[in-house]
Length: 421
Ligand code: NAD
Image: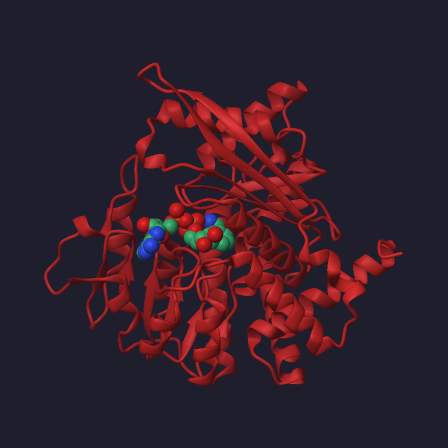
């Protein structure tokens, strides 16, 4: 029987483990084991056929110790309270690792957006925004895109919020279209960050990225961009997957062609509809067992389980998704000598450029793309170096190193604010 997946419990275990390494007393970090605020909303939506459907939505602020809440909004049929709590907590640690002045939050709606028309999706988004309105705002909590949400959905959220308060508030969400205050570089930022972190770890390990065989799970915003940029850096991407299948060619896939195929048109196409000589279709599970140098899981959490971990041959995993490797799998991989660049570091590029977007909105200024890419790279390499040093210093994995860096910053902020009296 497969174990029940309880991501928030796993986050709490990781916090406890890290606190033990640091020799902390429970009272110094207990608060981080409890989300600060949790809002569950029921969202009535009039469907195109005249029926009324009620959806469940969430917005959770895990911590605002280091600044306003920050985190994406997910639309998925599996969204639930436990998952959103974990995702919100990961945001707290992520913002602390890259040292940007935010806390952690996350939201979501339990819905399969594929089953909704564009108009139904807009009604759902607007009503959800109205329901979580008391919690969000540029000084309080700033949502962004996540799985199955995009810049269009962010513009509906921004418009709904602005209508309620009576003036335009671009800084209430990030990941907006450029024309209404979005930032250059935001849509590619998470994938670009995954590429930066892959380049950095390979450099530290003294291995060339050029020619390295890479497998990428998930071909959406994060996985698609990461695959494209890694291929442009000279890596050989041998397999990419989405929810429909995995494409495989041991000599390397034409990633630019696949990227254009998937992204042309209104809605994203599935990889299963891509046909090319020399490219075979395999399952996601088979893909993880390929002879590769690097795996980039960039689809969802809970993908690399114990069973999958046992078959992994790659020696490096760079996490594009949040929580793609379970704690049990993590332990197996560590024993096998597989190095993992953890999610809270490797996929932080999105929140870093979201931070730039928010700063530009608040100051009503616009930066150019070179400036943004350079600033993102600087912040992420600095964070990588702190994580690397912490992991060498304490002789622990990079994941534990990342949690050490983040937890140290969080307890410092907590004690300076005097919240633990
Ligand atoms: P997305 O919706 O753009 O893409 C998700 C991709 O994963 C799609 O190709 C989908 O088909 C695939 N997928 C979904 N379920 C799958 C499964 N069971 N097996 C194989 N493939 C599957 O989402 P995204 O924005 O790219 O987010 C992907 C991950 O990255 C999520 O864990 C998200 O939380 C995380 N993340 C996203 C951002 C961001 O800026 N978008 C930032 C940080 C972390």
